[in-house]
Length: 213
Image (cartoon, rainbow, N blue to C red; front, top):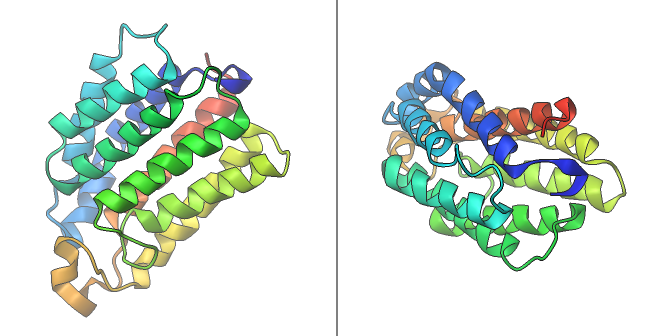
């Protein structure tokens, strides 16, 4: 990948951060959801680390596809389907590219986002889901790349956008998932899925800034 960023290393960094964040994700989801978001995400990304441990030399498409299949099979419920679809769409986009440059990363990220939105029954910003953080993060990243900024600067912008998007869910009424059954009682609580996106964005930023291979 461009700027010598290893997809394998990046995925492992994301997995580590998700695993560490399990208690917070579980606490957030316990307030208005099933309470299994953190546990499911930890289980899924722990499995991803195990499945790709010997794939250091694999291409981006193969790594993303393996991640997708693993998440679909190990994370229960809607989260597994949404994350799995996102990674599968990213794998599909990456598979059409001979080499992956910065603008190609933008294309891959949009493919993943659109997959997540569609798999989540056309979820949109304002529904109090992970899309409230996911979509702003992707477009903030892409905007910086299109403006000629570095991948590190783009990753920083993505983190800020994800955090702001997640913050916005606190005052929203949930319109999707179990939380939607609560109606106005869902106001005042952060959506756990949106915080998961913040965790992923921060892990990616830290990995990129660290210059890891």
